Every structure is written in structure tokens, then in C-alpha cells.
Length: 142
Image (cartoon, one colour):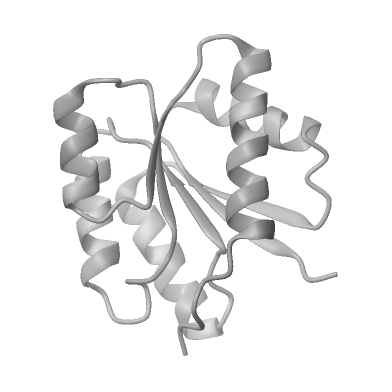
């Protein structure tokens, strides 16, 4: 079985811990999760992964981060050779229509509002992971 890679980009350590716990509890067999605590760290990791041929199968991206918000990270991913086709799911607390529209306008693959209840959050992550890393068949980005 091929290991499926997920990159979680979130500046909030509590949200990262919850997401990692939820992914672990979802029996994420065959998946490895890397974490970037900022947009610039994420872009560094993605560029290195591209150069090494180890791009993630899925990027989970928080919208509200300091210095470089999720839209700026999304723009950088969509503009950079070899990264444009990555599935990027916005995973955020904002349910604002403006944020949803803007995310899709900038190339988000999906937009998910983080449920406040842990069981619902775990189920949301399980569904996202199953679709994007098991069911979805993206084109090769060579």
C-alpha cells in the first residue's frame, strides 16, 4: 500500500493537535501527516517535496493565519510550477460567505468549516481524507 501524504497548514497548536488526533482516530492507515505552522513554512515544505518527488496527496489549509493568510498561501500554490494541481481543502472556523467565495475564486478544491464538536470534526476529517486520498484520482503532476 502506498503511503498517502497530507500536509496540514495551521498556526493554532490546539487546532493542530485536534486534527492530528482526529486523523489518528480515523484509522488513517497508510497516511502520513506533516504539519506547517505558517504559510511560509508550508511553501518551503511544498517546494522541497516537489523537488524530492514527495508532494502530499492533500493539503488542509487554515484560512486565518498571521503574516500570510490562507488565501495568500493558496495563491502561491496555484501560481507555482509543480504545485498548481495539488488538492487544497480550506479547513477553517469561518463560515462567512465572503471567505467561501474568495477561497473558491482563488482555486480552493473544497471549503470545510471546522465543526466545534470533536466527533463531528473527526467525521469531517475522515470524510475529507477518504475522498481526497483514496477515492479521488488526480492527474500526475510530472
